[in-house]
Amino acid sequence: MASDLRSRAQASQHRENGPTSDRGTARSEKSAQEAKSTYSIDSDDHSTRLSVLDVVRVLGGLFLLSSTLSYFITGNSITWNYRPPITRPARIKAWLQGPLHLTDAQLSIYNGTDPTLPILLAVNGTIYDVSASPHFYGPGGSYHFFSGRDATRSFVTGCFDTDLNGDLRGVEEMFISTDLTDASIDESTLPKEQKRERKLRKEREARLAKKRVEETVKGWERMFDGGKEGRYFRVGKVNRGPGSGWEGWGEIKELCVKAREGRPRRTAEEVR
Image (tube, rainbow, N blue to C red; front, side, top):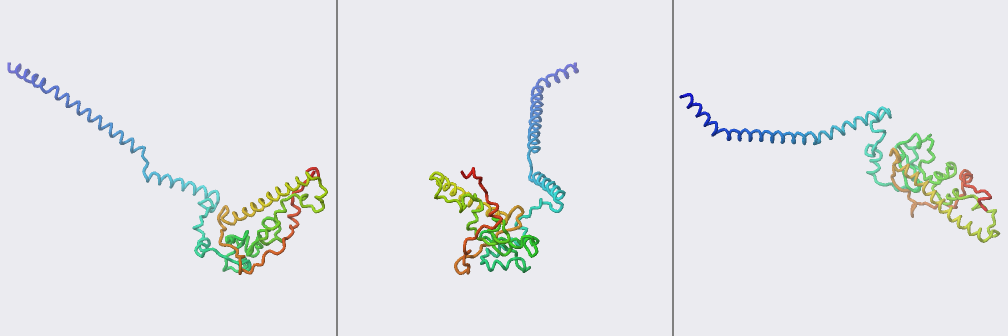
């Protein structure tokens, strides 16, 4: 009988505590699932987020790869033979000294014969430092005749023996058809329509010829003002103003032989 009483008491206690215990267990399981879900989300966020250190590692790896390839391809440079201006002492020194203003006579001193002076040349009145290539522009170099002067005319005509000056007057004629400047043609005998057509063609070709001269000069200016490797740079202007002693270029010069022979020619059919 005592055993029956204990069994009934245990059953009654189980009925009273059972639902509460089940609810507690359910709440515990739910909290565990929420915590697990939160941890999973946080883990995903951390796994997809890049830190500053990760970015530095990637950039460092790319730089190392580029430097290695550059050295094996060029044989002596880890920056693909690129040298920024800040690594060129001569350029920094010129920048600190400020722009030069030299007369043609003063410019002639900077022709490379004095090792204490930079090697300078001028294109269309602008002075450039070419000291980075003494084997070209210094004494004995293939282009030494350009140094210490403004030789713009020769850059256009290609006559490096007779046109070592900056006078561009009349140079555009080398790009104009020979028949338009042929003195043997008496335009007064031509029909009115042909004279008109000839006049218009002269004006058109003269415009185009001057444009070609300008483009040629600008091409040389780009080369000496940095260019592909940035070895040369602009340092000033040629002073040809009042008080400089400059007396002008004199009479307009004839085209050199090379420029004359290279002029475009039109056949008799094209002229007609």
